[in-house]
Image 1 (cartoon, rainbow, N blue to C red):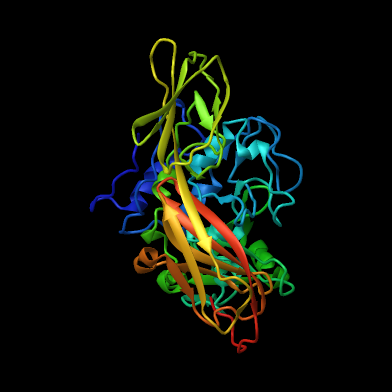
Image 2 (cartoon, helix red, strand yellow):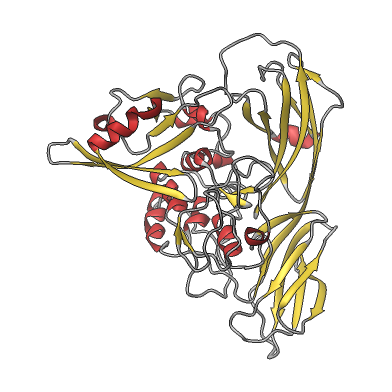
Length: 463
């Protein structure tokens, strides 16, 4: 197993990403039958790479579908054999997995290489708005990743009207733009969508005047990179009431929602080019958690034609099952014991393939029965097994500002309960409550809905 590069006092994370980002010329490496980097530790402290460098991890990755059935948010499907640049757009919400947050980039790239993965066999179209593939990003999760949030923030949280540590750039023009600035397009109506983009490069002439500006964003079908001359950037900024914002105090803007205290996003692991297993892959890709009891579909592919004899499944290093193989095909198993698992193939000559890694975890969410009052505290109960509960996320269906990632403390984890402050949500209606758990291989989300009633004091929306 190749571990993320260790960070010494003499080498910063910025230096490390500068070294490894140029290596990301394709989705997989030539040595594609070996294990890859592990997202096994929280992001280290120390000097940080720029937001633009982090954004490019997701926007510059290259991948090529191996089947014609991966749904595309622009309509239709991604084309088999065509190379795409940047991760796909899909508003997966609680039903899918956000690339960079719920799964590492390497898990997405592994799923791309398995023609029977959920990317090709399942769709979120019709299950949740603005979604297509089971794995993806949206504009705000893309900028949240770049700005080192632990949980994606919605786009309208990027402005100073409801957030601290961010200011309106003055003047609103290319001449004032800086790398890391965000462009916010406000919503036309209360429940309409908004959009956010990021400035990732600014070119100046010998006199110091801005000549061009590069803007990157997540939009269908994949992330997009656009270079505009200064005058064209000003026209872009003037359209649809756009505003150019600058996060001047990242800690104040993020609040408790910080990646540094969590395992994901794992920028070092995401920036490495993974070696994808060519003998077998999981329906979720590789390096990924499953829910307890969820079927695990192992696709025996033998793409190097070395032969297959036995599939060996282990938990914690101990053999769980040995399955005789007659050839390529899918082996499906469900596991009711939580733990860390591997699956590898023994070949006819006795050699072993690299192993796929997956975890089996349990995550349970409990809410009060019946409707609750806006003016009262909301008690949330939870349990987990083989993963750590990290956050409770609230999403109001009646208030587009009522989106709140609430981080769970160690004391609350031990107690198995979290209290949502009274009056945090401002409008009555149905509220989605997501419980988010984290394992070193990724995250799981469980959602339940509750109705909040009664009147709350009308105040300025807050994050």
